[in-house]
Length: 267
Image (cartoon, rainbow, N blue to C red; front, side, top):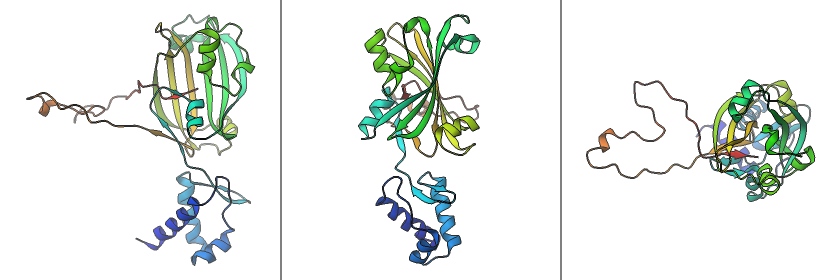
């Protein structure tokens, strides 16, 4: 192990005993404690910043971040996931508008372009820390009387089930990396062009009718996706040599777009 890696591991050991938001000692003091140069310390901290384990605030210092929130690829709500982790979920409504769907949204919700949809922009919180920015589109006809106050600090799916008799049956979701634009970064409290995860999801009810189209951006420094891999059943005799593992692309073919059909991050 190199000296640099040893220093990094010492910083990681310190993080184990630090609460989220707790500040590291001043740079000069920490470098003296570890017996290293300030340049070496900065390099080690830069690596922790890149990994989303600490945050550097210019003119203030370096602060510990809590562990990343992992999202299993399963149909569960943001509220349920946060509560299961002992984290307090929350949301703030940034905008609530009714407008014609237009071609892009209408195609995803299987409605006419001139049908009204409710467009909602929500900031999702974990222990009051901004985690994600969510754009939600719902056909107005499915949720008569829906108001901004209905969505404040509660699960949208619970609201749909309780007030409108709509139950989630299944979703199709895609996930891809992205960079935050200036507006997104401001809402999430990070720098412009910070890495993020982009989720787009279409959810359907028991009648197989789409009831929402959601576009969400999750902070890359605070969120990760967890996938559970299972071993497929043994192939039938004589077919084993031809089998291709699920999710792989045979050599010589163009990679295909992989779409998650298990639900994923939910409101």
